[in-house]
Image (cartoon, rainbow, N blue to C red):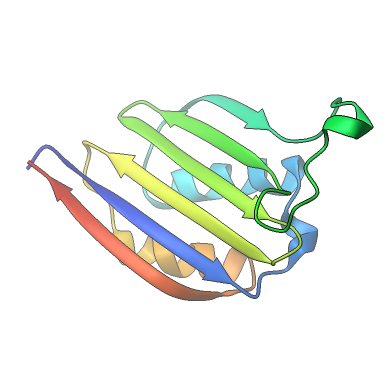
Length: 121
């Protein structure tokens, strides 16, 4: 096996955690939990974007971030209006996907509605 990817759709989340500070903390705790080495963290959101260019639609308003890890990356997309978060954890180093999923669900105070694990060969 080359690696695996865990894909999570979590709904009914605490949207107060949909900010850079909380997401940064999420990545820090998740990496420690699944024994990954964090590298560069990149955010995209509406901070410093002119008002007329800010996202306002329910399916686009939110924060996206990529936490690069030594063995690949973890991405997150939040939808503030809908209270949803979408997470992908991909690594060529094995990790406990059940622990990662449970931690994510608890961290965002939501409910996992879709959990998919893909093995890369």
